Image 1 (tube, rainbow, N blue to C red):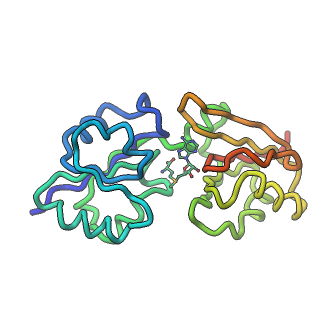
Image 2 (cartoon, protein in one colour):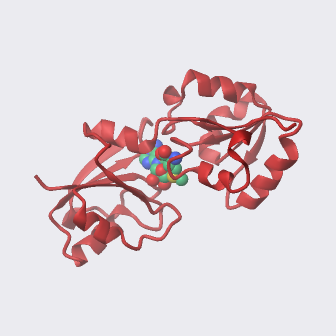
Amino acid sequence: MANLIHVIGIGPGNPDYITPLALELINNADILVGGERVLKPFTGLGKELFIIKNNLPEMVRFIKSRCEDCHVAVVASGDPGFYGILEYLRRYFAPPELAVEPGLSSIQMACARLGISWHDAVFCSIHGRDAAGLVELVRVNPKVIILTDPNMTPAALARELAEAGVSNKKMYVCENLSYDNETIGEFDIDNVPEDIGKSGCVIVILDKA
Ligand SMILES: C[S@@+](CC[C@H](N)C(=O)[O-])C[C@H]1O[C@@H](n2cnc3c(N)ncnc32)[C@H](O)[C@@H]1O
């Protein structure tokens, strides 16, 4: 029988936010699977690595071929169940084959930094996804939290909002959360700089008070 495949959330990036249990599971694994940024803190552990980069079908074949004999850990940023790798893995592996270890999501971190709750927010991701419907989502909801990617920068989104007449909002751009170069910017919709959030960030959009 194959070993359990651990799917481990490591939080927003800074190793200080990895739980002791997640660290123990990573240390016990033979093979680590994950994106380059996520695996960076673990490259010195002497584990076999599989780097995820536009090769998800190959990742599934790799895991299936190795999980009989090895302990495979899929390491994910934030929480694996929040716009993460878990959704994809569930297409190929039944729940009893996966052991999910939660992590602190980037959206929790963003809300903590802003000192706001997140139970009443609407969430959306345009990380590798279509941004259709986003303008209307922001128009009708007082608190919207968005994961971005380089194809839709905060400035590009702000332009779309302004063109659609959605302007009575504040945009908070949370970059490099948990790292030494973390920044949190607060902007009016018509005043979002072009050069921020270009490599992915968390955007929080709130109704103006
Ligand atoms: C594939 S999604 C994964 C989200 C992750 N599962 C989570 O719970 O945070 C990647 C996106 O999460 C956001 N993200 C992840 N880590 C971040 C960080 N340290 N600072 C800002 N945004 C981050 C960015 O929007 C990035 O493009």
